[in-house]
Amino acid sequence: MSKKKKKNSLPLDYGICHLSSIPVRKAADDRSEMVSQLLFGELVHVLRKKNKSWIKVQCEYDDYMGWIDPKQIIPIDQDAFDRFKSDFGVALDLSSSLSNNKQSFPIWIGSSLPLFDGISFKMPTGKYMYNGHAIMTSDRKPTVDLLMKIAMKYINAPYLWGGRTPFGIDCSGFTQVVFKLLGTRIPRDAYEQAQHGQLVDFVELSREGDLAFFENKEGRIHHVGIMYGENKIIHASGQVRIDLLDHEGIYNEDIKRYTHRLKFIRRIF
Image 1 (cartoon, one colour):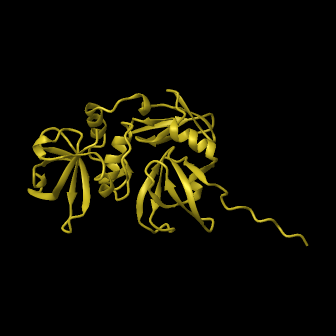
Image 2: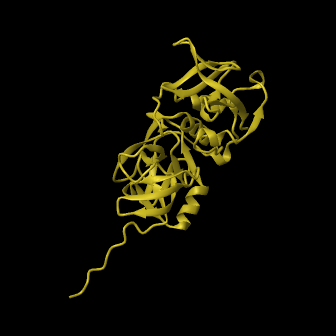
Image 3: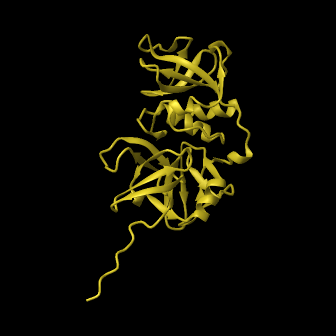
């Protein structure tokens, strides 16, 4: 009696997210903490497989590692991985649809559009039309004016630990995706973002677009926001909101108290 050949469980080293957004979890379990999200078109390098249900990945955009459901990505080879990571547009509308001759579905701001030509882009499953505005970050110099326009799109987005979409976002996910739309890569977590850019010595010397970092009682960086106008900050705390900022930290006028203690400010560009 001949033995049946075992099918490989997801024989891939690389993958691309083909859904609007998917959770990246701390452990290989649906009940595990969501530590980040992949947006449509973002790439991963597969590090480890666990059964047929989970794979540990390293996100190409920011090197963040976590566990995802392999059904939520499409396997690609290294050639496609290299082409997609070096040539893509970024969706600028909060939500807009893409379509081909079989289906249509929405994607969120910050999603990647591989090999985008201004109208359409390519995925392993074929060519798609994008029915919204997108930015070719490689052709655009980042400006403070553009940064602030993008940041304001997220006003009132609810806070979500690990989130990176306008339907749920955390403080460092907010700053990271806003800077992604400028073609400027910064890490995923606030404490890592705090190692980038040029230190600004005093609050009075800060300008719009600078990143302000805040410390907990142990002195560790645990929050980040974007300087907005004079003595203000836009950040994700409960929701994406604008609050007052001085040398002590963030002052929430709604509750009449300081909520975050300022550590320092950095200028990214």
